[in-house]
Length: 232
Image (cartoon, rainbow, N blue to C red; front, side, top):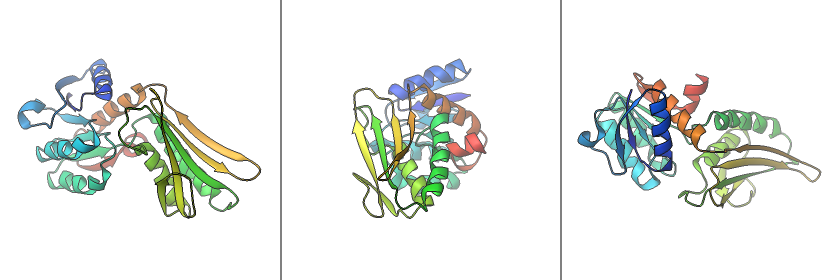
């Protein structure tokens, strides 16, 4: 495939390396809002930029009828508009808060555990995420996805930054050195604690998942998630 990379930071560079290893051609490496001229006529766009730029980046590509895979978090209040644009332009959009296989397995495990814990009121639930100090959004998109999975399967009504209180599920967002990403879910009672945890050792797992998603989306129309890629 011919791939345009929109957002060429640390993740973009690793995606570049993995895509080339898998036999793809990188036709654009952009850190500015793309245009028809600068994109290089790609088959697919992979967008990992920043929360302020993501909407305009994705919108431009969809209006050019290009399929887009995006892993940028922190802009999702506008996601519905982007999904409508993908349909209106007869192309495809795939969003992932995290493209790692391990994290997506963790998402599934998290929902199953939430279903089990729903009827045991003696346990309180708390989330924690740790990321590198350069990460601009808090909580992480991954933590929000985890929280949404718990809310769907329990009596919680919303999430918030801080400690769990009442119907609000708490997320502690910690920023620490060069940590790629650690996410934990705790269920605590007076007598014990249950914890599930995912720890990323590098960004390569995220990058590989993004490239696999770009391979998968080619030729498709509509809106998708990493779950569609991994689990059908």
